[in-house]
Image (spheres, helix red, strand yellow):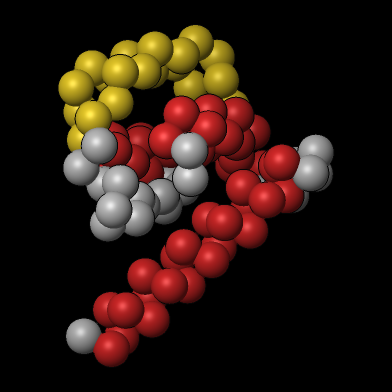
Length: 94
């Protein structure tokens, strides 16, 4: 359990760091986050959506437990993964 908590904390910290960099106008160096995606998701829990997106893109993404069950209504065309992450963050006010 201790390992699971530590892993969750590290994942949240890494995601928060990327989001903070995006907010500051600094695009992360990871080229995978520039990959463009077109997605339609209606009524899908955020946690499930991020698991599916991780498989599709090869970029591991997870949701915090307090928002993992929040349902998405998402339609994006040619968004980069970085833009998508920022949009989801803004929509969930996290």
